[in-house]
Amino acid sequence: MARYVPGAHDDALHLTGSNQRLVTMLERSTRNRSPSDSWRWYQALSARHSREPSSTDHQVMNAVVSRAEANSARLQMSRANAIMLDALDVKHQHGLTMEQVDERCAMGRKVLDRMTQAGDVLSSAQINCLLRLFVANRDIMAATQIWQYMALSGVSRDVTNYNSFILCQLVAKEYDQAFALVGEMRASGIPPNSFTQCLIIRLHGLTGDLQAARRVFAFACTSTSTWADETDGYSANDDSVVYWETPKGDDFGLCGATVYTFNAMLDVFGMNGLVDDMQRFLGYMLGLDTAGADASSSSSSPLRPDAIAQMLLQDEKSSLRRIRHRRTAPNMDTFHTMIKWLAEYWDLEKAEQYVKLMHVYGIAPDFRTFRLMITETTALRDFNKCSDLARSMTADYNIEVPRGLAKVLEAAGKKVAEMEESIRISENQSTFSFQ
Image (cartoon, helix red, strand yellow):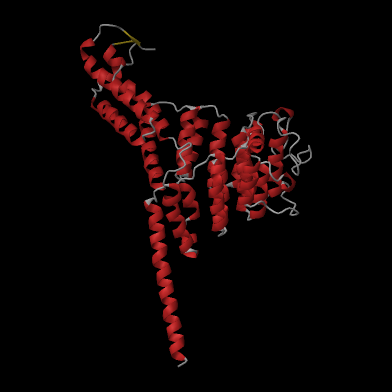
């Protein structure tokens, strides 16, 4: 390994100091979640690397290097590549537009090209970052190539790698391949985590196997003492567990039901059109309607959002304490799932009630919340209601209407006006023909 020898070529410290400063600024902008600034510093270091004498690449291969060589742009690039990939990661970046994702994906490809040219080996975390980036960009081919790279380069796969690529198969609607990956993961002896459970629940939901999705959820509930006595209508005996084709004792106790597994079940009910069951399940999640937890039973009516709010406000401390103990306090995605599917089935009134319910849990709606309700379809179907929702964004929640949302309403308004004009002309012609 190369080591620094004090005194050799120390007259070039002005250059090395600049390179270190660029990397420091790159790290700082990454911590500040500013990909554009990170890219600017990264490009500056890359340009400096391209201008370095080619002899530097040969010199740094020697056992002894100078201070200037040890901190050259050539050697700093490896660190900069890793930092830049971290800056481009789309994990927890839920508000990105497709244009922003496209831009990040283009940057990620350039970083990957430079790493390949330099002969750098991708780490497991960097591979996850690239998989998430390509999945968000719907570039399934690129994600598959990254997955194949792991096998060819000998990088060991862990649960997070499998989770990322299973998600890729779900996006590509390659459900058989996703099931095959679950089997491969199991055969490799890799234990699941909570996100694995969520993926398999959604996988069963996408293939229409609701009973299997419910049994996977039941497995999550019974794999921890916190939930062992609270599964209600969800049974998970040895004959029905389908979390793995051959469940083993060491699977139990790995991870119990969390808000994420609940959100996955909510999503499954919604994608299969079971809106009433979805609302009953939310009541069960909040500890307010456990009698209606069994999705196969329609004996109980779903709790309306206003009823949920009233019950919580009456006994707020005990209710919130219970769901916190069960690790099922709803988050933003919980309400977004409810709002998304209610809007999908054109029940904007009830979707708006769930927006109002969010404050009970200290969750503030943002532009994404309203973007789920105001779509091209809902704006055409009920333009007046969508316009009221847009006004409510500013008046009630102090949220600026995004340009994209304004364009949706503007386009819908023009089409509605054209349809109304067409109807008026048709009515006038019909009236004239009878005179």
